[in-house]
Image (cartoon, rainbow, N blue to C red):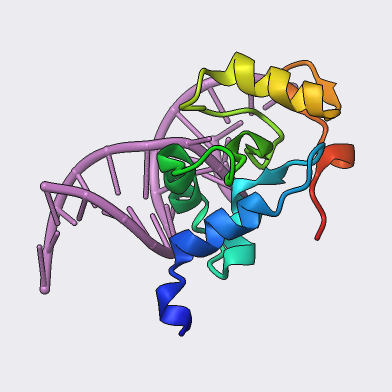
Length: 103
DNA sequence: GGCCTGACTTTAG
DNA sequence: GCTAAAGCCAGGC
């Protein structure tokens, strides 16, 4: 039953589906999870991030491409990780025009 | 059952 | 163009 799959579970599933070199926004994951506007809730789940290997929360950025918190080192590390994956950066923000994940 | 918090988003000045 | 405030959703106590 889908009841076992809570909103939180769906967010983790979607985040784990983000391909390398691409990034998604909190609002986008919220919409994909089925609750548009729950961007804040998504951020909470990323903060709890149960497994960094299954949930690449570093590939999740703000709607503006700006990097927000990161409980696994810091924004600097998150930024470097994305660059290392091939994500195009503009100053301190991700270029969603090319790095935005499209299912 | 109700209140508070939060890695967000959007609109208005 | 930038700053400030309000709003929405889910989780925790």
